[in-house]
Amino acid sequence: MSGADNPSPLATKVDAGAARKAGPVTETPLLAIRDLVVAFQADGHETVAVRNVSFTILEGQTVALVGESGSGKSTTAAAINRLLAENGRIMGGTVLFEGRDLARASQRELMKVRGAGIGLVPQDPSSNLNPVIRIGDQIAEVLIAHGRAKGKAAKLRAIELLEMVGITDAARRYRQYPHEFSGGMRQRVLIAIGLACRPKLLIADEPTSALDVTVQRTVLDQLDELTRQMGTAVLLITHNLALAAERADQILVMNRGEIVEAGNTREILENPQHEYTRKLLEAAPSLASASTAHQVVANNTARGSSAQAGGVGVAVPADGPSATGSLPPAGVRGDDLVVVKDLTKIFNSRGVGGKVFTAVDGVSFSIPRGQTVSLVGESGSGKSTTANLILGLETVSAGSIAFDGTQLTTLRRRELFRLRRRMQPVFQNPYASLDPRFTIEDTITEPFRVHNLGTPASRRESVRTLLDQVALPSTVAKRLPHELSGGQRQRVAIARALALSPELVVLDEAVSALDVLVQAQILELLAGLQRDLGLSYLFISHDLAVVRMISHSLHVMQAGRIVESGTPGEIFRNPQVEYTKELLAAIPGAGLSAVSAMGSAE
Image (cartoon, rainbow, N blue to C red):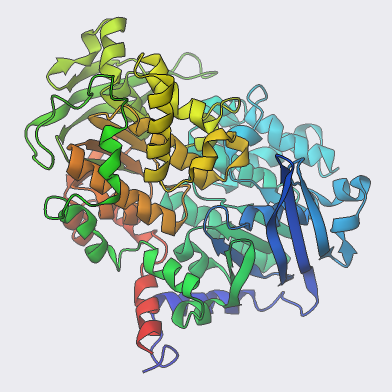
């Protein structure tokens, strides 16, 4: 039976979405790109990053550009409104927006188009929000610059936009600064800025990579509504194939700077023609494939030691002491490494009359040696704050944290410094966690320098080993962070965390910026490290499909409290609380594997 005879839930949803948008779509392209070539100059050599790319976007249409990090997706988007890096240039082709070639437009013409005609939601909130300007003023600034509103009207519209993208208590939040927002909330602010002038085309570059699934659904539903009402077209750039499948009318698959496959969303999912597209479909995590993918964890003690992680155990220079010498043998799970009891964190909230905000409220859980414990929940639920308390990056208001029997809350600074070698973080945002002035080699060797380990030669050798383990070429070592894609930067952050062979790794959205192929590699790498070195992980994520793949146990957090706990199988098969059910219902692409399997069978 063909897919058309027996459509899957996902395919049906795609068709329904296309029908909703059929009204405002016209046959005259809003955007027409023909034979686009983009190159970058570095070290005296010119590298072609985008080669002969051609596609069109109609009014009211949503087109998804999907591919690995470094495939050229974001470069293609940056070329549309000429926001390439200084060393990048358009070498050939045309970029026609409403009939005007933006590839050859003047800066004055481009200024009129940017924001008003073409809105942009960039990937990284940390580098795109001014840290010294209030959130609301940054949104209002866009309205004022394009003559859409001014004064009180601009402020009121900015508050409306904050509410539209799911930020509660928007009038108060208007006056806060970016550092007072979570990563997901900062991303939502960028979405509000991109939509502020109601543009005809919105370029959304990984617009929801930092958002939990429920807010992701809210934001993308809003984008769909704008498409229906205003004829606003969307170029959605994402590594999340499930999200693209649900939201796009057309999918463009990009690999090594070229579009290797393009077509109707359902056709791409059910009958992919290119080998690369098939690899993307096979690697995409979803609830439908979770039972198979969970073997990554289940087989940890059964598989041999030939996995990708094998060499990382010797990453610490040979003349430095081993950080894992006190661990039990690889694969052996003993007592709890971390015990958290009645943990509470209270913050003073700015501008609300001295009121306080309880970010973590009486949380208790443990992390056994050699296991992965996950915290899931919406942005602002307290997941990252809990992680920061364990790492000693925030002070504890009440409760206790024991690491290998030692109470962290009573340690002196020097004792805490020594202990930190045994626990390492991988933060959510690779753009903010890597020093832009450091080469990648300097970044990875920094832990060795801080802890006075190794010689320059042994450190360089460790860098090569670590880069290889996170699937990066050794040539990356001499480059700066801005020369890497988002996914490549996150892999560097993981390599740095592994440098000292810690016992506990705290992974705060560590794979949210990675495309599905690299994500699968990193999850395999983490599983192999856990098996070979007995590592324990605290895994924080809004991607529940990924959480199910890697976790031994998980805790669902809401408003600073743990509302449900259990194994992934228990919680995903039979959630007990309504909040957990809502999180599961919001996961994109639950039927993705069924679609791809159907296509393979045909």
